[in-house]
Image 1 (cartoon, rainbow, N blue to C red):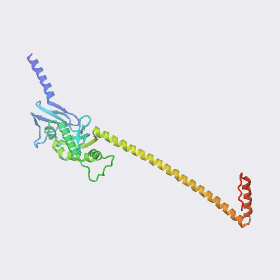
Image 2 (tube, rainbow, N blue to C red; image 1 turned 135 degrees about the horizontal axis):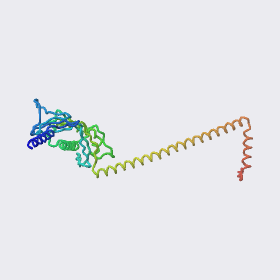
Image 3 (cartoon, helix red, strand yellow; image 1 turned 90 degrees about the vertical axis):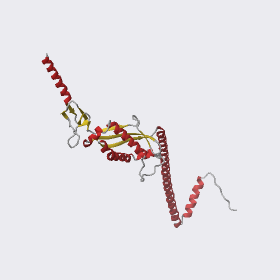
Length: 288
């Protein structure tokens, strides 16, 4: 019985140590071991990283697996309440996506310098974005907004969203990445939403602008039609005038021909007789 108990105990210990002494690192991840809170390092004080696969460890060692793939943090103004105040006091909601991935050479900062890396980076990026929106100024070369788009900082941020993205991305890469052990691949400010009151005002301005443009287009089309009709009337009048002119020229040349033939008087008398015969009333002027 004692032998059986020892054998069962040995088998149980073997199973326990097998489960506790081996760990697996998934594809796209790296593993880091810590012994009683101290990270395992090489003689050069560099963090020992375990690639994907099955590895050995002592039971008292703890495994930290870190995803080395690109990760994204989505900050939504609708769900997360991400808001920022612009320089003119307008409260704006913003939707943004931050894409980053840990840097193998700086993995110690990412793992052991931050209690909750993702939450810390999210909060830091939110504060940075709010600061950039609050202090954002368009470049001097920006054209003055029209009456339809003059709505203060919101319009400037909407028009210069690419510039704001670039400023935030440069700041993240230069001042944040090395400090927290991550590399920022992209910052996408997907949308900037105005408050409800400003949205209603913008809709009213857009509707008024659309109505004005429609009225202008209608008036322009009507004016164009009138101009075309007037031009057509002028052409018709010109054609009629040319016809009358030609008729008069023809009649004049005919009368001149009769005058040269000394038959103009006879022609006039004959035409007078024809007209008198066709008239209903004849007025005679007596010479007294």
